[in-house]
Image (cartoon, rainbow, N blue to C red; front, side, top):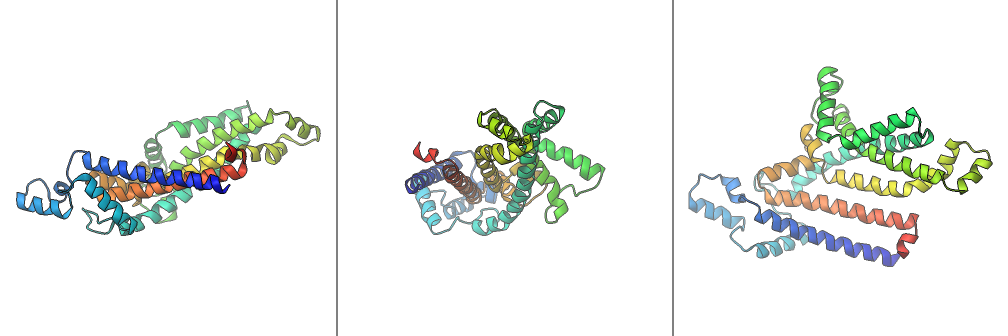
Length: 306
């Protein structure tokens, strides 16, 4: 087990630094200039050269990269070009908002995803099964921005039950949580139902039937536990992807989280801030995958052997 964990940890570290390198290079070769974004295009050459020097844009890319890595080990992500504030402090303010949204969305996703998956498996082939699977496919297939606009129009604009945008109160959290939770719950429902039906076809389930257990009891006592292995991975990856920033949903609902911050940084070519948000998102996703691998190996020891 120790060897397995160290191997996965080493792979995670390599991926982390690989992403940092690729991101840094891409941010420095895309069209545009951070100095121009800061002072505008209509300025004299002396000011432009001074700002370029202050931002170290006059140095070679690799020299800037190693300088960035050195500051990174000190916990310094630089200063936002547009906001003129520490990137760490900006992210600290935005991350709790994304965390709240992620937790609320996952409560909806995990709760309804597992519930609908079990019900669909119980009533396999009936109208109940078709309704839940249609809901699942709808959630997976529909773009999140379309679901968001649709819910805003119905529940905020027409019925006026919840605010159309904003963030801070429980009512303002409802719609964006449903938008994200609906999409993610569909994936859990579909995978869980398929796994349960596959297990119900196994020979050892006949023994449970002979003992007089109902289908519901068999699913809860036998099929559900065995079906949760891939679901655990899906749940962890969903949560970590949300922590990385749900860009479209946060933007539509005006949530000051990591997603909105990333789009703002990209639009303004605020490279230090953009690199900081990408670094955090990458770290969360890599950590989520690492935890997922460990849980997998605990639930099914055969994975460690392979």
